[in-house]
Length: 272
Figure 1: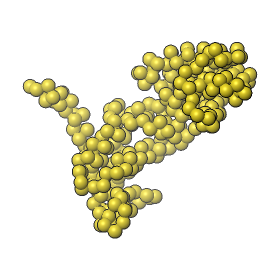
Figure 2: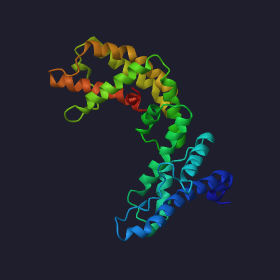
Figure 3: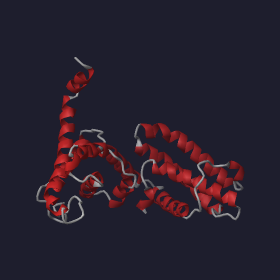
């Protein structure tokens, strides 16, 4: 038996499911294309021009329910399907029959927006959903694992303070002039609290790398919560926008590393 045939035979259940997902995505794309085709000749050659994309309480073709069904199966059955690749594949199957520009992005946005409704029904704050959506995970399973981790993180006593710090750091970094250095240079430290934070970041980074590889997001955030004390001490004693350009740039690099650790799971600055 050829290797590919054997693989399909061994995973026939998943293969059928995958085809079903792709077929449903293709249906969504094709339906919007078909219903909007009459307008293409006199308008902008854009999909969904017919107005049949579900809005408000109107969903005549139950596309919301279909998308929720896909997401529920992927999450509850722990199927790590890359929806970005799947939807792009579906788009290519239509060839010249549709206008593909931006179409995959529209469908992905529609599908992942259904997760927001799912989490709201489960009592998950919308800020938790948005903190994960900001990273645009391609897998619904991965998305859910991050949401559950952030939900658990919010219950920690350090959560509110660290969310506020991340928002502060995000604002500082957005106003930085030029590019931010990728490397922190300890030789530019002139305060003991800089050394302390740098050491704490290095230790945390080393600790969470294996967790990140295994998608142990809850454990990662719990470990990062331990950074609150050195972070608070840093901001109490250090002026980030120092007069010396090298010192200032180095502090931005240090804060960028801090922010990057949290962004490995979610943008918790949105929790504030």
